[in-house]
Length: 364
Image (cartoon, rainbow, N blue to C red; front, side):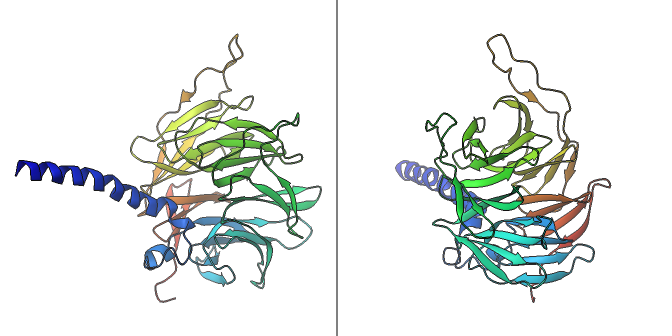
């Protein structure tokens, strides 16, 4: 009996980590499964919101479908048909010369441009790998799209022609080859105040690129797990990874300035806007901080930065989602959050309450 008990303990100790990791994989990686891989998951998979954005007077969300919502009424306006897989990244592009359009990237390996008025789309480009992240910029009056995939090398394309203009392979300014990412690009963002692209990778690093030359400018190495989310606010970079913290980085060098620890949750996504930092968690809560305005401390005699400072506990905690908060965006004083529970919620950050919930009805 003693030997049987020992064998049973060994078997359980072996199976339990596999079971737990598979449960986490279902939440963490489910968004990049295609239709065939997710067969049998049913409505659980179909209703998981992977991305939310606002533009053109409407809110857009993606679960198994790409949808446009009326913000004022909460009514579903349109379901876009075209992608053959889940949309993982999107944004509304407005170059000031033509009507705003929605650009989306999907696990079907395509990047599409959508007419918001008609719902029609065209394929901008087809990639070799599943599209996981997008970034946008107007360069010389021309809209450019930055694409991140399962491949470690992001690239920039012209939005009109789909022609690839730059590949971010790790080359540095002196012509030498620096260290590029070596795993999937899970998020990216363009600094609205400077010609830089930031990319977040599964390799646990963030990289800064010059979008005019394609050169690697800096590597931010401070996370212990895959970096899932980025945000730039007033020139300051914020990053969140699959651990219990987010980091704000110094502007003069790639070193952490502030650490935002979450003691009772795992951080999934971040958004810095209007002097506030929001973190979405694996447990379904959203935490809010007021971003400290203190400048980064001076470098020491050796030119090294002192260690990062610890931010105080979050001032606000928003509760309402029943599963991981995967995506955040902000518009006109309201925070929008998309969750794996299948809902998008609209929060009044002044009243600190949920004012509307967007959800597809089961019979629709």
